[in-house]
Image 1 (spheres, one colour):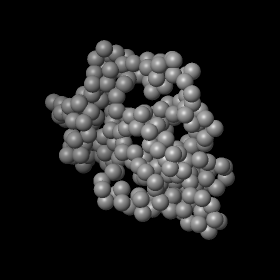
Image 2: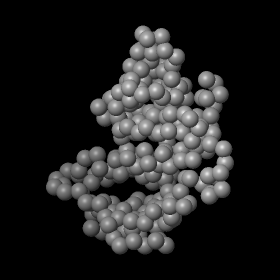
Image 3: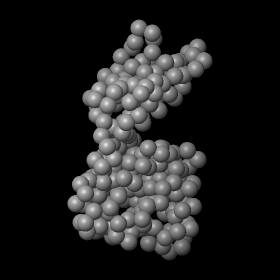
Image 4: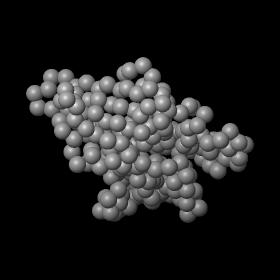
Length: 233
């Protein structure tokens, strides 16, 4: 990482994570090492250069375009991502203006479980729910989500779908079966996923999800989705 490239930046963490996951899924044929180099002074775009990775797929190019960036080959044979993620400071993150801390907390006393295998995604969602009054439990896979539901009282589940060990859909199907066996009221559940095609959403509903959030999403979308489920409950 070049000097200055580690500053906080405002951008699209969900699409960036998916882009890097796809690029790093497997090395290029014949490559012995994979290298990432982050550069960009605070006033300049963020640049990520990757060597030892295969050519970008159409999905990767689509993600980069949606982030309003560009992807190109370099003379040395590496791939360069240039993203217009400007630098920011912690005070301008999703917590909102300072005056919001005095506003009524919309989810005071509620207990939410967030499951996502990306530490970055967990951090972003926790920041989005800061100052809402909710107590947040975060885990990194569906098996941990299932265990947390069994062992602690919760008011809502926000589950990623594609996770290691146990995916979010399998975890919720298990929870719904146990709720039925024990005569429990179903806990509201939101599928938080980048996989949001119509046939996938139908599968989530059939598996017991009440709603979904398609990554990437804004803080207000998260708040509105939770509020709508609370009203229905």
